[in-house]
Image (tube, rainbow, N blue to C red):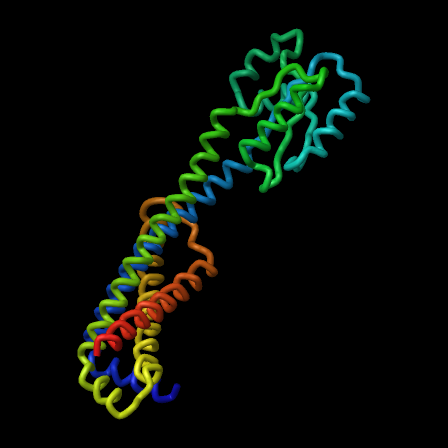
Length: 285
């Protein structure tokens, strides 16, 4: 291992321009991944915030007995995916309407009868915020005789979860594409380095050097290239985040685990690309 480290460091000293260009290209490839990750993370936060407001509202009939109301709430609370069932009286419904819609306050004083029905608002656990769960709870709530109507914005909920699925699929496809680009860049750079030292490699094989001894320094070069590229990508992504945050709109920074994963992926791709390039060249000589 000491020999491999010395040889890798020597290769960096012999061709700093090639190393720098390789790291730059890897950094730019991973920078695009970083930008996409930044956008995907903030889109995910926005969708999660909206999903937290997904709820089923069951409007109750007039004159519901307390014992029937308690039975309905207890049954709904036991349904899969349900986090909380809250009861809102007619008076509370009126107060909320006046608070949320100021124009109602102007006419509420002239009303002799409260037109707003009592209701049950059903909220969901994070794992229960799916189209199937929401629909199942809505159907179950509508089946009770004390419930007059059920609303949950079916089309809106379906579009929300559709966007979530599209976002996840897009992230997978684009992430894989950019990862492939980064791998090709690293592999090409390492292959150039291998060709630059082909005579040295040939002599080493003539004197009986094992292949593992030959390709270990190149693996370290690939890992170092991926590491430098990953750090550069994080720096560029952070600068972009700061520019957008200060001059356009607020953005959340990506989690630390994502950054560590990005650097780790850069190193992994560097090692894999180097391994493939060196093994292919060794088969040719």
